[in-house]
Length: 598
Image (cartoon, rainbow, N blue to C red):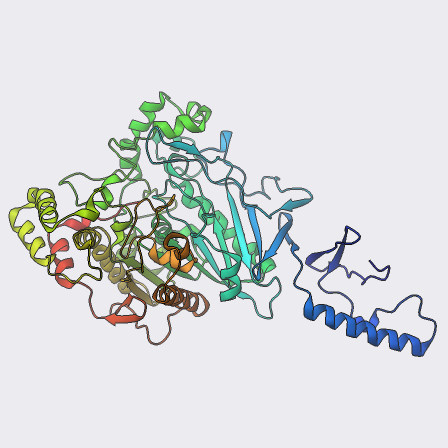
């Protein structure tokens, strides 16, 4: 490597590592280096010779810039210290960045603590080239499930196409799903990538937040002595802490702190809705996309603490000190997964059992949430919630990702009618007959087989998710001054999906997760080779979501709700109402109380 190196001006925010492979030497070069015209060899003896050398140096430099890719390693300074990230696929990534003090020991079941305020920032260079631990969880959701992850898990990751763009880039913060019990912000095919950041010219953040009992256990013994006079919803507090980090630091990664979109799927969608309603999240984001989140959200702190007493009994603890001394496995095994209050949520993909409801995980705790969301919209006034542009989405066969019957793919129409009759007769014979008339075997089916499966999962999805979420969108449109948009994914993929850690069933239709997998490029992972129609669907989802994040509204061709509902197939179309008669059936007969929770 030449002895003549560029000068390094002080005060530059970014440092790039350039490696000389021949000399095995690392040289630090600031982004804001001196103009090549000023780089003059110390060996230059004559004015003319210096001019020639300077011109040759400029030509060589320009040629170097033209053919040399960006450095593979970059360093960024945040409020808590320096990070070392990496370059791949057209973007930089900084993974596993701590955004709060580890919630371990005495900090278990407490609000997240700020690293700077606690004096726990790292020293030296933090290696942000790899993901850190996922949050403690068990899969499947059973007492004897496999224990995974750690409590020291409050990390986020950033993907950016440019550290110093001409204009700050829009920011999209991803909140993963998993019933509030499992998964993470770093799942392959279900989280951002360098390729996505480069293709959409957007900065992405994903985060891990506390899950299951560690993130959402509401108990009176945990409320006693709490600085918030509440218990539960710790996972939502983590999300708010991460959004505060984004506001303070994202400019260092090329992001616009004034254009932050939160988007999440399943319980990540529920999290988005929670953040919209929380006064603690005021001003931390500017648009919101809720994909397949909950509708039922009204459990009081007192009622949750009462029903969760079962957990306390199973731990054999009597106070918070004892609870904080339990190890991870003991906590996870004490959760009442399949007995009331049944945190496993096995029933959510089936028609309901009359009078049987799931126990609450997310609660109205009077801290993160001051009131049930619908009550806030109706009575709280504009200051009681975050009025931002809002997208509400579902898929037509949500429950096809994990249907309750193993043999559903081989059902005959006789099997279908028997199951529906058996499940709904307790609600009344007239309702059963109406249901079979509205969901009958003459319904159109885009495949030549598995049609009973499609119709049954459509029925359960309408009752549990799609129709209630139509009502949620209607309430939002009535309360918000900002635009509200509603979409339904109706696309049937070219082939069935391959089961994975977060997709347990060989799904065939517009299953739960289809929109998020398409956005993150995960369709290829679960489908294999994509057809042209699969690619068109994927590109359409990305186009509209990114436009919304950049502009705070959908393109002109997508009208606001309630005037239209967008149907997302390989092309987009619009209807005035989706399945009005079917939705009226479920609403008039009180089935919205059985809609998705948590």
